[in-house]
Image (cartoon, rainbow, N blue to C red; front, side, top):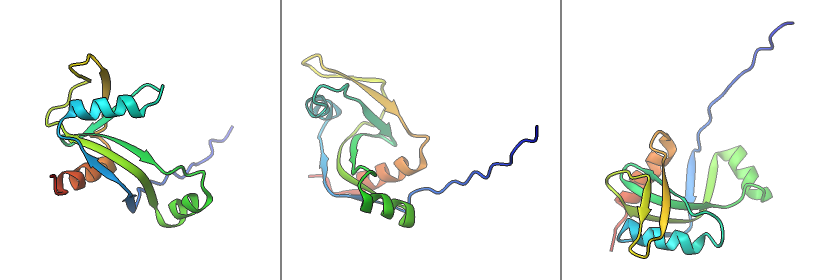
Length: 124
């Protein structure tokens, strides 16, 4: 049986558009927020480049979003919550004993670029 040749192509996003972002002064505050925002689902944060974050993408099941993703490489994020977290830790535990897992996604080039951008934003 002949093996079929498969063409594999990598096509990273060309643009990520963030509609709303919230900076949390501590990773524990972000963990509290994600626990409330998870609404019954298991809360999880991501970490890259010294930033813990949660992002909510606009579903690609929306026709115009899917078209823009495929034709223009654009991804839309409705919300990003983030906090500086210089050192990666697998868990964040708050004083209320809320425990939120953190996934190290620092091997993802796109997410590293996003976290670099987040760190450059004016933090007040």
